[in-house]
Structures are given as C-alpha cells and as structure tokens.
Length: 272
Image 1: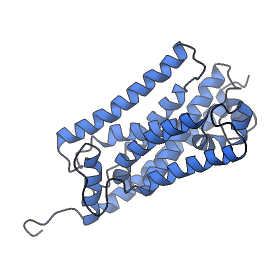
Image 2 (image 1 turned 135 degrees about the vertical axis):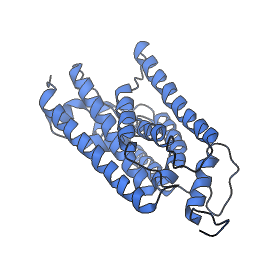
Image 3 (image 1 turned 135 degrees about the horizontal axis):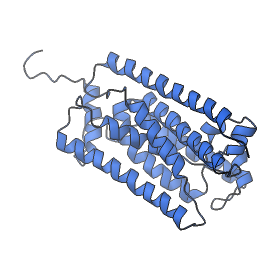
Image 4 (image 1 turned 180 degrees about the horizontal axis):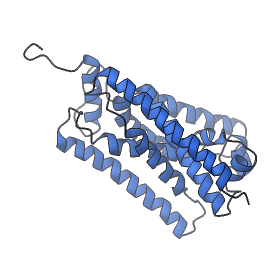
C-alpha cells in the first residue's frame, strides 16, 4: 500500500464518521451522520401503521386490547392456542398510543444511527426483526407460564433492546478503527440506556402502575441482539466479503434459535 494511503474506502470513512458523530465528534462529509436509510425505513413503517390505526378511529392515547389485536399485537393465547405466530413479527410495529410510539422511535433513531454504519441497512433490518421476534417469543412464553395468556403486548421496544444488546457486543470489536476511549464511551451510553429502561420496566411492575412495561420482551430482545452479534464483524474495519459471510451466519444462527425456541414453546408451555 502506498505511503499515506488510507486503508479504508471512501464509503467506510463516511460510515466511520457517522459512528464517531454519535460520540460527539463534529459531523462532516458528503454523507452526514443521519445517512441511515434502514433506520428511517423502520421508523416510517411504525409511523404508517400508527396513522392507519388513527384513521381507522383507534384512540391515539388509549387503544383497546381488541383494537390492538386487530392490528397485529402480540398475545400468548392467540399465538399458542390459535397458531397466530405472525403476531411475533407484526406486534413490533404496533404501538399503544402516541407517547409509546414517540419514545420507541426516539430510541430507535438513536441506536439505529449508531448501529447502521456497523451492520449495513439490511443488517439493521434483520437485527430489528429477529431480535424483536426473540423478545416477543420470550414474552409469550413467560406470560403463558404465569397464566396470563390473555395479556396483549405491542411495541418496538423488544427490537430496540435487540439493537442495544447487539451494540454492547459489537462495540467491543478490535477491528473498529476508533480510539478505545471513544468506543468505551459509546458502549457505556448503550449500557446505561438498557439499564435505565430495564429499571423503569421493573418499577412499573413493582408499583403496579396502570401502564405495564413488558420487561420480558426487553430481555428477550437484548439477548437476541447479543446472539446476533456474536459471529459478526463490523462493516467498518473489516473486509466486505468477511463481513457479508459473518452477517449471513448471524441471521441464520438467530433464526435457528428462534425456530427452536418457538417449537419448545408450542410443546412445553401449558395453555391455560
């Protein structure tokens, strides 16, 4: 390689700036830190579903359980007894009111802008859907085992926690050409996000508030994201062929885990 030649492509340099911008570095380059098509695509889908609910006369603040189920919300009884496994995916695009939507989209925006340069657009979408499904599956199993099969759950938070779990693992990669201090700060930011939101969810359970946060969906999503990240290498700092092979393996690995866990639930969890 000629002296002074940058080892990374122009595209990788822009992605690197995007990641470092999340840690406070000034934004520059033709592609700003906000260049994250998959992140905005997922946010758009969530918002379009919410608008569809609104124009169908579903309350923007207090939708009923039946209304949420009609739009694809999760329910242990519907999944395990009626075989509506598609709810494991659709529920992550349905929200219980505009505040629920806004908070989840704000979190998705922040973590998506950080994660998409490391995963690529299709990698971020795969991580969102698969880790969100992991969260919803764990929620189904735990709620059914606690004889709460009729409970209705919805929201992107399981998938958002999946992105957090993935970043907690991936930001430790030695391949990332970012100073250790910056990486540590970014990773600490993600860990604090996860811990604070776990605590909030636990608080709603202890205080028995009117709004209950499904921490099992959060936990399942976070673990799913970590499993997804285990075989990964970051797009930045890695040969593209190696990155693509590892990403395919990550998708296949978590998909297999979800299928096996779903099979276990369908046979081991009693239907009350």
